[in-house]
Length: 94
Length: 102
Image (cartoon, rainbow over all chains, first blue to last red):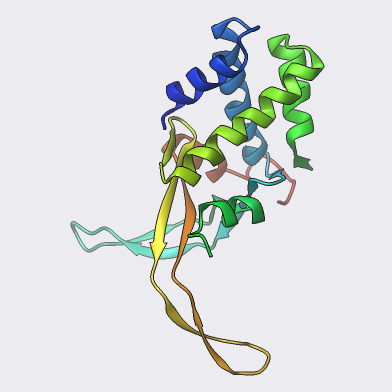
């Protein structure tokens, strides 16, 4: 499912809204999720999962082409952990 | 600070002009649709944000960390999230220019 397919499904579920509203709503939500992580905030969506930042310490990497050592600075990367309901629903049935 | 469905609904109320009920339902429906696609075995690609994919993991040997007893970890299907380049770039700079810790 792509973003445009998601928007189309939401537009169908909310026939009282104009199609543009579903489009705008999805974009607003994704922007808000991105902005929260960029501020270092956690995101917790009950029944779905949580997003947080993981720290990556600085390391010495190598340029794979030339073999030169390069300092890779510390950074944060986004991390998603599926919530209980999502985990159980995607797993194989018992 | 933690972002939750309540804040997302407030945002849709303030910025998109949905009424409170619609805003709450829209947030719920958004995550519900993503969950339903994953449940069906579809991956979800939200361009500019990231992809949710499914991985089938085979059974592997495990151990009860308390008792040391060996028990197999059963084969399972799990969700993985891969952040887009745009999302990675947005968080990479944290906390430079921001004193807050996650």
